[in-house]
Amino acid sequence: MKLKYLDEILARREAIAYMYSELAGIVGLPIYQPGRVWQDYVIRVRDPEKLAYFLKEKGIQTLGVGMTPPHRALNIRVHLPAVDRLFKEMLRLPLNETLSDAQVRYVIKCVKNFYEV
Image (cartoon, rainbow, N blue to C red; front, side, top):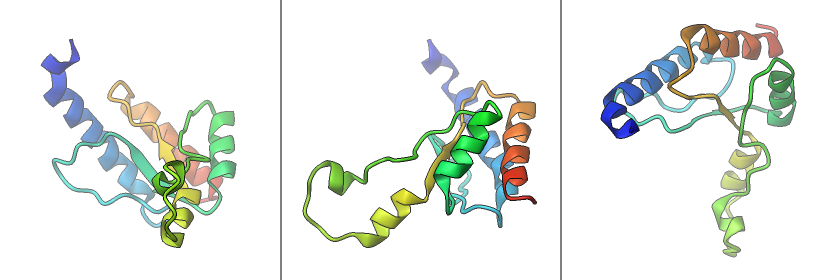
């Protein structure tokens, strides 16, 4: 039962999020807040499809490409261009508490390689 290990799981996810902060200045990062529950780690990039494909070729699974903004999914007729633009720039990096530090460093290295940093 995972609930018994919730504190350890959340601490590990926070540690991974902190490691990803090394990508600052390369991609748009979520705001890091100690104690935040890191369910997802969503970055902002110009071409998420290209980065997702590159990472897939390196054995790294990502999510978020092609997601529909909530107002569109629910067919709410509002004009939210900033939200539409944001959803076109989103990509979720792996953030599972079972990832090792070496695996997280590999993800970071591959993102840096994609941007030739």
